[in-house]
Image (cartoon, rainbow, N blue to C red; front, side):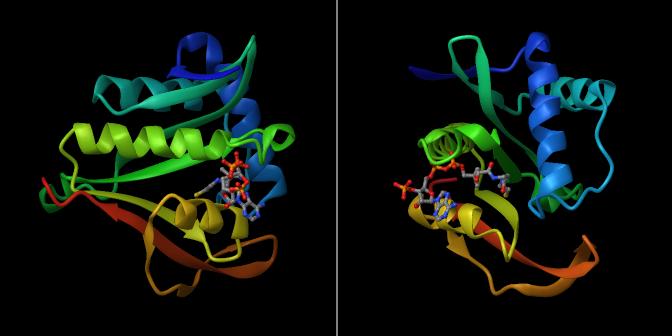
Length: 166
Ligand SMILES: CC(C)(COP(=O)(O)OP(=O)(O)OC[C@H]1O[C@@H](n2cnc3c(N)ncnc32)[C@H](O)[C@@H]1OP(=O)(O)O)[C@@H](O)C(=O)NCCC(=O)NCCS
């Protein structure tokens, strides 16, 4: 059975492995060099210290994916806008885990009084776009050639949920 829980220090090697696999093999994240355990630890501690979620999907002893959100931009006007990310291990995809994690981000953001939850998604990332559409996210017009990876320009789409009550 797959369960979601808050990430702990012990989950960091698996979170690192999932992150670095996505960096090495996909255009989902526009990083090209692998992250380190220290970077992932600092990232998790920073998020948790600010009461932002870092959630893992677990089956037995296996970490199959994780999700988190944090500030979108630093200016005060963006205080109720947060940007999320969701990663599922390649051998665990299409089992509903991405949806579980994304729904957890929506739930957390809404309960925390956020107004917008937004994902910055590579326009060619059909899996992520389909996932967000299925979860009721709206989408912006793609912004052309916002970055580069693997020797080609990448377009960027913002997919967002508004929480009208906040
Ligand atoms: C995007 C990602 C998180 C989806 O996770 P997942 O666990 O495979 O997705 P789910 O099984 O929960 O899929 C939920 C729905 O999303 C859509 N979807 C997911 N993957 C899809 C794919 N490869 N092609 C088409 N639709 C897809 C489907 O509508 C699916 O519902 P269905 O299986 O009933 O048809 C996963 O592919 C991933 O981690 N990719 C690499 C990192 C990444 O792109 N992260 C997002 C960055 S913003």
